[in-house]
Length: 467
Image 1 (cartoon, helix red, strand yellow):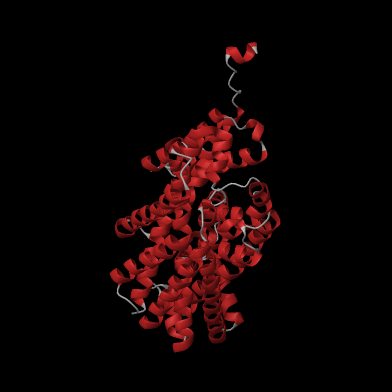
Image 2 (cartoon, helix red, strand yellow; image 1 turned 180 degrees about the horizontal axis):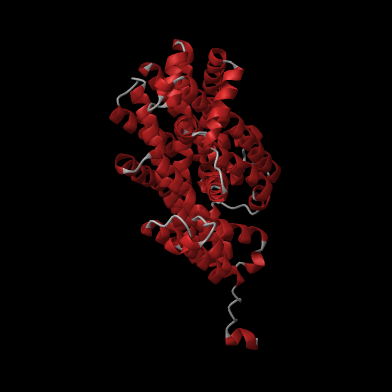
């Protein structure tokens, strides 16, 4: 199996080298020349998020805690893709942006652009680290490679083909990877169905539904987890970079809808695997449920297909996640120093940013927190700091002034970070104890910060008034 995996990874790198000839400028490198059709657009959107969080971590959490644990994955991101099709795909594609921080620069000035780019870029490092760690542990558990070599191989391959061909490499390899992923996951799902039957799976689902919250406050907490996944991803560069790369507004919108529907459908398979394993295979508790089920049920050929699909899922998330913050750093942080960079220097800046992002993420993988915690934190930063300014900039630009926007961005982020440092889960911490229903900080912080858009506009300078 190790040899097959190495051949597969070599083939991905060869494909990246082949398509690199299409990359002639930054527009090609970051947005595939804005030429993606519907098939490639929805496939790369789906592949971007359907990684270790959905395939591995969510199944383990559901097996341990029940149906309610599916709130963050896969329910939240699937809903996010559908919302993106309804809310932002068309109006943002129309603006011909390169990064979402460009929109913040247009509406909120240089400080708004820089702060949004920094917040977004920093939110990806933990997510990338999740993918590195999860895939390396899985390959180690499957006895394909030991943990440390698997960790370095995962990071090296994901970084290499992103570095070589940018969005063209990412998109075309995603198309190959999503085919393998869905094939392997479907085979595993059919084997589980054949072993237990429909009625047993339904009983397992109903039994584990005991984890669904009871009472007002638990429901608010569960809804918050859904909203973190559904709304926290909406300002994400990885999502919107694919919207910007679509051939047209219609393609961008339909790709979001198709990817969202596929995400919810195929994301339900790991959830059902987790529920069924918890009910019928208690010996799998404490292990990676999806991987252990595959080892238990699949033969040599189908097992190999599943492993390649799993590797594909995580690699497709890694390459997309690396390209997104590197684009923000190269275009909106360092690139702003000199907007007149020639093509060669601009390409070099973007590729250096790719290496920097991968290196920081690798450090987090070596010294970071648990996978689920890293995943959750990655979602929250864009939600608390950028969601409201994004919607205002898109739908109410007349209210979008630099002062209001920067206050909302910095205010929402600062409120949430302060509460995190103090260990306060709910808005205003100890003061919230006297309230019957407490508001989670992830929802309260952006709502409080959004009040900045009700501030009166700054008065024009005296010279402007006289004119």
